[in-house]
Length: 259
Image 1 (tube, helix red, strand yellow):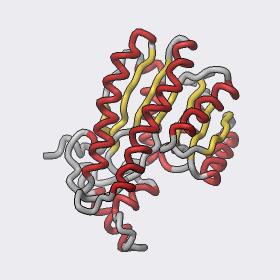
Image 2 (cartoon, one colour):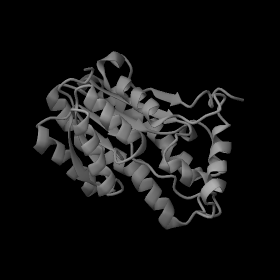
Image 3 (cartoon, rainbow, N blue to C red):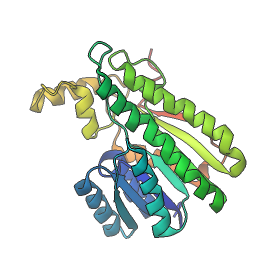
Image 4 (cartoon, helix red, strand yellow):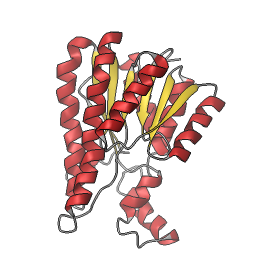
């Protein structure tokens, strides 16, 4: 019960690592606010949380819209009267190479990957201050720590989350609000299929082969499981990491260490 009586918001909790985090946080004693653009996935996560003996509510949100981020925080406060944990997990691959990037796709990627995270944190912080502290998490990427030549806009966005993490960690430390950043490599989730082929031309076994080839870039020769990302988030959200703030933590099977 490492999160006993805590109130946690997780965005993009309708599938993948966000869903795994919602179920895990609930098992550890938190009440979870599930934010996702997909109502079917979000409601399924709430069902899974309740089946595991936890409590959760679903809020349909587009994480690229500031008004929806305000709604997400407001709903959590209306439902549970406080807020202890905000995991800004939502993100999209966005456009690919420099030459193929169009303005609309660029703006959409920045809105979801950066702007939504920024404003969700803005709206959450006053409530955390009122509660005496809290934990904010961002999901960045190893592509935010080093170059991603095949998607410079993705590196730009995810790198921005790393520096935002450090900025907020310094700014909010006096209020007992810790801010940390998770930097995954490849995760075995629906999004990795988009990374495998942004054009959408690969299907079936061809797409799975592309995904498997990408996984080989890790020295551990596999992708992360969503549950492994969730366990790192749990550690960073819990009091076990009480002296950790401003950190960008790779969880990549050794990919960053590989020359």
